[in-house]
Each structure stands twice: as structure tokens, then as C-alpha cells.
Image 1 (cartoon, rainbow, N blue to C red):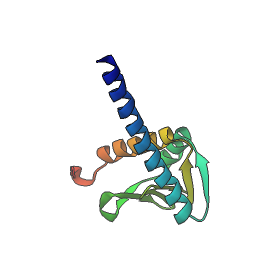
Image 2: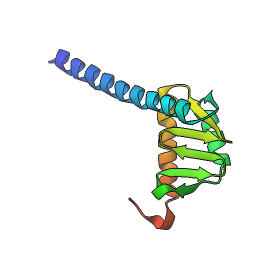
Image 3: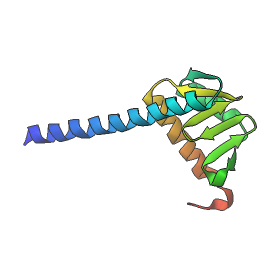
Length: 112
């Protein structure tokens, strides 16, 4: 019985890790393919730059844009330069941060 529970926990953790790694890999690929310049950053740097932009919703609320700052389609740009998150944990923390931001700043209070 204990072996079954341990096996189940290991399987769940492995699956979650795989999903995070795939999402992070897509982020890296999208940023490299669709930005002229890019660099690496962590969650702390992401929050610093994100909070300096005056974000507005574009393209039906999926993409955030503020002058030369952009967030959407797994691409993060500040001052026109792509930011690739260093680790999958940094990437998921950034995604969660933007999700909370979107929840607090929806136009007209709509919940889609």
C-alpha cells in the first residue's frame, strides 16, 4: 500500500515537472524566434521591469502592451528586448504574477 502511494506521488511530481519544463521550453523558443534581441532574467528582475510599465490590454485581453513593453504568447519584452526566464520556476512565478495582475486589472470588471 505504501509503495503504491509513493509511486503515485512520484508520478504526479514527474508529470508536473514535465509540464513546467515544456512550458518553459516554449517560452525560450518563442522569445528567441520572435525577438531581435534577448537576454536572460530571473523572477525578481521580471517583477522590477513589469511594474515599471503602464500596461494596457490588447488583442482581446490576452496580450499586454505598454509602449515598448509586451507580454503575451510566451514572450516577455521590456524596452523592445526579450527576457528569457532562467529557470522553469522563474517562468511559472512570472506567469502567476501576470495572472494575478490581469485578475485585478480587467477592463469593466469582466471575468472571462
